[in-house]
Image 1 (tube, rainbow, N blue to C red):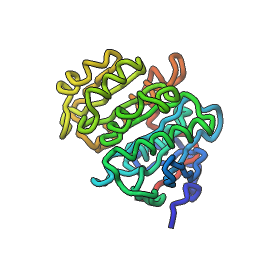
Image 2 (cartoon, one colour):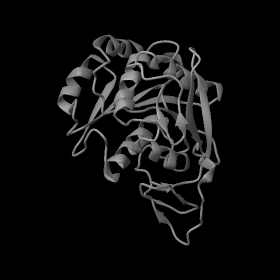
Image 3 (cartoon, one colour):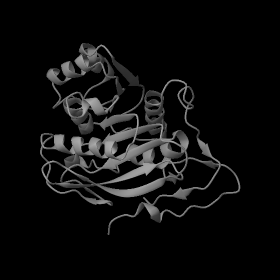
Length: 268
């Protein structure tokens, strides 16, 4: 059965609630489908602020599906739970071709990051067609490869502001792709865990040194999967600080850790 995001049951606590891993804050959530140029149907979810304007849009690209990555990978799930309410940010999550999750399984099969170019293009086109503003690619692990390989070339480049990379392995993305990012001048924020399994902060700084506008941020104590609320929260704070325009509320301070309003609890 396909998960229905409208199935969350919200309650109004008598006092502010601490925001935990399973805390779901109010948003307008809907199941969506993306159509690729080669005819695949990709399943996903769009979470929008329940009220007020959309200040920024995250187009999320998940970790490697052959190693358990999907649209519900925990950082992206928490982004969809929190950021529409806390920061006015829209979060688009989807399963790349052949990837399954409680939302459903996307058409096609894993294509080693090659056919997935059309998945990235379909997601960006969806966000454009929906009129979602201030669009950013957010890639995690394998998703960083897709962002680097396809985010600085058309038809994607002109439709996104920049990209945020979480735990980039730089296995598939090459110096050619880094050169394209350098030439684009678009912002590139790179969050690298101290104990990453593939690329640690010093090596990442060297690899990304060819992209003048890239900002490599080493995160002490973190690992590739950003396990733990401390590290997931750090990632969300870094994302918000990057994508919200200067002077917008939320850019100078950390996201709240409590919520005074209706809340729901997600099932594990």
